[in-house]
Image (cartoon, rainbow, N blue to C red; front, side, top):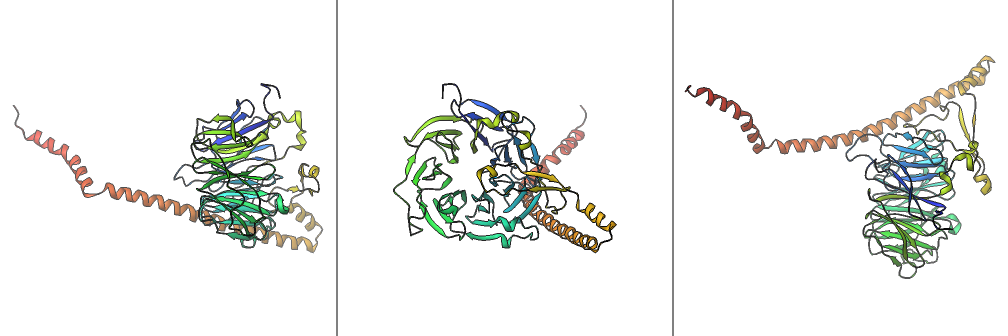
Length: 478
């Protein structure tokens, strides 16, 4: 690659400081900023690339706000305003399936939201954790959703059960959970080894743990000298990189399953990469090497073999919370690289669950991904007649099936209305709790301001002017 030609990859970064900071895109080879997207402030694990065509980012809420959340979606190959969605509550971490068909978001209340991306329909929302959600990822085959929370609990959910519209609950969707971590979960990642059956979690309790994704069995624990804040594996999945609270990055051999004792420390003493002066916020890999972001407002590109920093990026507008590496070609015009018909459709994400037959007759037909070529095939969206039209036509023929379908449709609508009512009531209880907390805080402040000393001071200030006027009036004229 010639000098000044530029890299084939682009580094996408964002901060959570304020909405004006936006998203920055840097050339990996030259370090030059090639693009800026305004209006974005995303929390940890809140930015992702959807189907190599869109950037999706959850937005932070102001401290103490009781309003809903926001999720913005930008097209990578078409300069336009973001598609803005406003869920009922703030969304932190995001996760999407490999094919981009489903998007999951976790909230500070412990709720998880699952959307169908093409139609924007909220398929399900449920209370997944009792504390704030920190991480969300899907398994390599998209059959499982894995979540981690502030209290150290890790849960594995069945997507088959979650997508079952007949069962709006979540109890049967939970395959297993673990509370082995004693502090907040900070990272989740899946591995393709051992028949795609393992995943790794990191925590502020200074450990990384490897799990069997199907049974929930703890396979192995890696101990560190201090809390781990971010994790990533190299593309070959031979090394585990764990960023810590003091800016060090520990590198250890990934030998999951080779040790019989799950509490044993794997491999030799980990190699340590030193170059940051603050806690590691995010880690990712590019074709060049490891990329790390820190609270010290720097992003470093590492040569892992020589253990040195190749290039350093300064993000003066705040600590980077999210890192995404995308091919540079994705930023070019869609007409130059792919047909418009292959564009994946995204919609505004719904606030509340909707009945399966209320999407104006739009159905999403999924292809069976039997090969990589099929996996890349576009989603076939086709319009069908609405259910009401079908019932009307059957009524014209005076068939008993029409009455049966009408009864079933009525039951479906009543069931959906009951589910939506329960969901809204739960959200109202959550918002009322937050409002009561704010009111209690204000009352405490008011009580402190209404102390005897404060009242006496206010009384003197109020009475002083009248007393001065009386003295002035009582003085005889000169």
